[in-house]
Length: 407
Image (tube, rainbow, N blue to C red; front, side, top):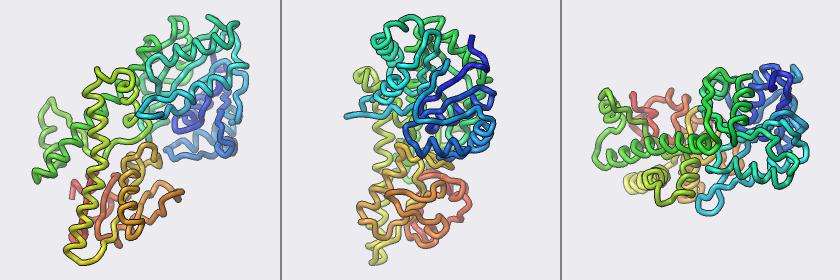
């Protein structure tokens, strides 16, 4: 029976893996955090973190100091193995589960009868069964001797530690006993309700949740484009429309980014291209919004040049995929900033991202300095720092994310 004396290996110490490892270790359970990046391993073993997430540093520091969390480059013999690695694309938005396969291969030799193997990585439907078949092909002695399940995370960056512990979880095993064992494990550190299902349904549930959100955001983004052409303040319009008791329109932005909403819908579209028309169109609308924003900046630049006879200084405010985090994965703001820099040959373009100190591609400028120097200010992310700024009439303001909607 799984209990607090069980040992857990968390494979992948990224934006979800490290918080998960720290949370479990905080419950007095021995956790081996595994990552292929030696710098990440060394950072964690010092009780420090390599990502920005509120409260995470204290969780990691406490867990390492207690001896319950230790990071390494290789997995150690454990009772539970959590696979928490990226699932990127290959080709034309085709899901790539290579990292899941590699992580599974890395623990193949140390798996033993009675172990619990759980995939948390966002996965195409059927991935858990595929990994089951792979394990059994390589280790026939383990056939029907392992508990195998899928349990996706559903957390909000910026509030990960609270939501990992308190949100409900959907848990699906390859059979009933696997589901039961996985629930037994999550009960050790999750306060939210644990909902039983099978692996395929759990996989589809994760994809469905984020596809639904993508579709809703696409409506808001499409509406913002229509309002721009119609000369209507989209922020006021949405506020008024939401006064209807059964209407809840989301806020538009410069696109959709992150490791979930911008990615997960493609997993469904890839496997079911003819059936997923709304889901596929929503993805295209949200991607187009980023292109549209870049074109709006370019048009503003041309208008400024015609009016003033000189090139403007353009400030791109924000690179992260959402407000108040440092995560740039699939970020529409980053795409827009790149487009602006390319069109300007890097001249007269200021890039701002207050949540990171430096970037390998972008030279970063302080947000107050950029705001003062710029002729055209494009707000791409509604970071809390930007909301403190006062709207100035002598600047061309392109507010794609509602920084000044209250001013």
